[in-house]
Length: 157
Image (cartoon, rainbow, N blue to C red; front, side, top):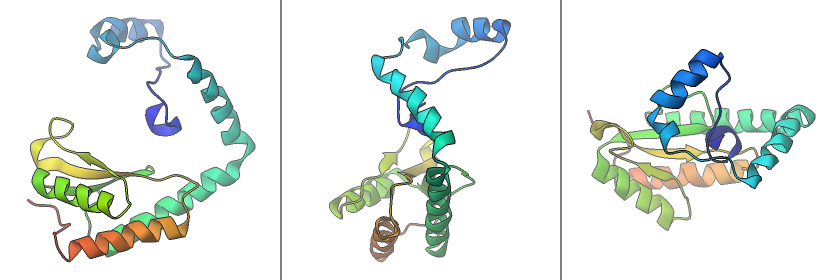
């Protein structure tokens, strides 16, 4: 639910045997808790996916546009096919520096370093929404272009 609906947690649909196995063998399950009342809003979100397909199309357009812009900057975005697009830097110090520079320029993106990812796989995580405009996306791309003149956006090997 956190990736698709901006919420907390998730669920699994499976056979009773698999559910039972995961209930007792999954470390994440051991520390989880029941859903909050806010989870009820997820039902409306799921309804809106069917009722207003415009938003799905708009989000897809934003992803295509933003990825093309990142690739034109020579950024390693991996193979993600979702609206959560990594900017793979590799070096945790440069990743933190770029993240800080983005924030100083009004762009919030998550800095993901070890132990969230492998030590050599540090990245900036961008998350797109259907409500982002081309102007929003261009601001990020232009900011990254400016940053690239100071700090390399290329993934360290």
